[in-house]
Amino acid sequence: MLKNSNNIIGIIVLYLILVASIGCAQNANDELISLNQEFSDLFQNGEYDHAIVVAKRAIEVAEKDASLHPPIVAASLSNLALLYYTLGRYDEAEPLFKRVLVV
Image (cartoon, rainbow, N blue to C red; front, side):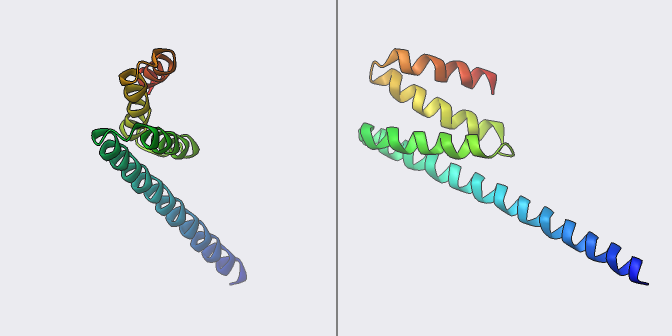
C-alpha cells in the first residue's frame, strides 16, 4: 500500500510540475506579445529611443524561454532590426536580421 501511495504522490508531483511549466511558458508568451505590441505602438508614434528599450526587453524574454513559439521570437528580433535599419544603424541591424533567418 505504501508503494502505491508513493507512486500516486510522484505522479501528482510530476503533474503539478508540468502544469506549472506550461503556465510559465504561456506567461512568457503573453509578456512577449505584449512587449511586441508596445514596441509597435512606440515605433508608429516615432518614440524610437523607448522602442529600442522595449524591443531589447522582448528579446531578453524570448532568449530566456526556449519554449516560446519561434514566430514570436522572430518578431522580437525583427522589430529591433527594423528599427535600427530605419534609424540608419545598419551595423546593428544586420546581425539581428541574420538571427531572424535562423529562427
